[in-house]
Image (cartoon, rainbow, N blue to C red; front, top):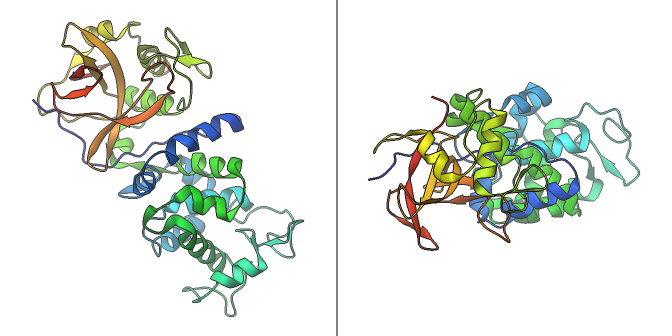
Length: 329
């Protein structure tokens, strides 16, 4: 039988990791996927601004980021918005160069672009922009930044990390932008799940991406095994689960054939219902495939990966998809 999948694309909602090392690990995971896949994970497809986005970005700038990004298919508005946040707090910063003049590096305006770079991407003048274009005008600046990113890898989601690196030649900058961007959008499924135990658990688990796999591990920033990650995520959500995957499968409510998965559902793998060996937390659908966050095996890190949605389908390593459950109901 097949477990029904929520139709919305996956939106990760990852929190900004603490420390540069965590951020670099996060962007490395994102960069490992196909460019178009990264675009959808960071806000391509059907997404709405998260509470983080609306709390950090003035409404006029939020609309501007969405409209400018739409001129470059494959560029998530969330990436453009994250750059605006990092560069100038979306134009609200009082630092030199944002409203007038230049900063120490010669950058200008809310998107902190160098003069020659802005001049290369300031045409055509966008609706509502200044004429002649000005790097201090928010409309001109945001559209110029979108064109810059589009020309350097964002078009069709070909290489988003490269486009952000071209914008500012710093790996830590790229990681910061991606981590922030992933907190700016949420799918319809995540909107529904927000505040539920499953929504809290999956959001917390996604924040652990990049943490090393450790057998028996259950400590953020140190290490997790598969069931340790699940138990810790649901503990944060106020739900107590057993420690090992088999017991988690046995103790939670099993979904029947055709039941739609929602973010936070547990998905299990092994030889069968009495021989469960692995568990992950369902995130959503990415490029038509179900994806989960899990701590897969020794030598890996907590990551987001696809899994088969048909019970009995091979997952790898001699294991098959056993089924899904929903804790806390």
